[in-house]
Length: 321
Image (cartoon, rainbow, N blue to C red):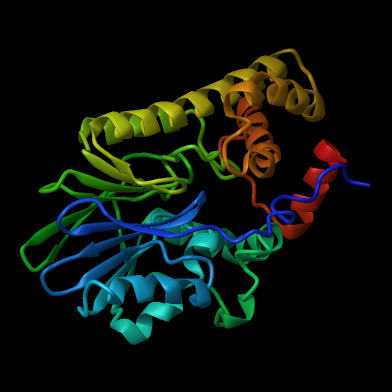
């Protein structure tokens, strides 16, 4: 018997949704720690950053957008590839979506592990995927990819898509409105929500956060948690994410250096970080995946291994069973 319900299978309560304007052209769709969606409303078109888990969930994003504009939703941007963020993409096609944009590194991840990631995440998040039958067969594929930087103009509004470094995944993309100092970080930054690190690069992530800070954003939409308004809140979001990443990796490296096995390192890391972060959203969901990936990286596995539905359950039983 497992002592805890697997991943988020016990998370069945609906969340309260907020739709908040952060700057002249930027909006945040947030839901108490569920995956966020960013919205940019330009002069002639709308951009959506991260699509929600299913077309049914995306329909609520669209409803909120239509309360403030009738402009076509021309661009869909994938900040990275995880099923819970991308499988709602088909809902935006009837709204005018012409391009699904991702980094080329994200495209590589879709090719390498897209099917496995889809099966894995559907099993982890039953509430978010309760309308999974609305997802079209197959994977969400970008129609445009870029490396490093892409600049789009929504009329007179400049929108930059930037790869600032690896962190949450190797393909992470942020969306930056330089004229309004507003940034959409994807899961590179979380706020009062536990970073998921199962596909992460712990060694790289802090420098990527430095690159975000160097832009000096005045508003930031994190991957999970409330939108951050003002430089002080943005700094707190960056600080909290950095502290969690650093504390988890330090604890795991210490255990690995003593040749302890994964289960022992997991228990010690939980004890070390729960006092500071245990109240954050999806802490118990994320920690087995986070410590497993940190242990791999600390023991010489530079790139994340592919998660499958089967590996998920085996890992959970080994650490929590």
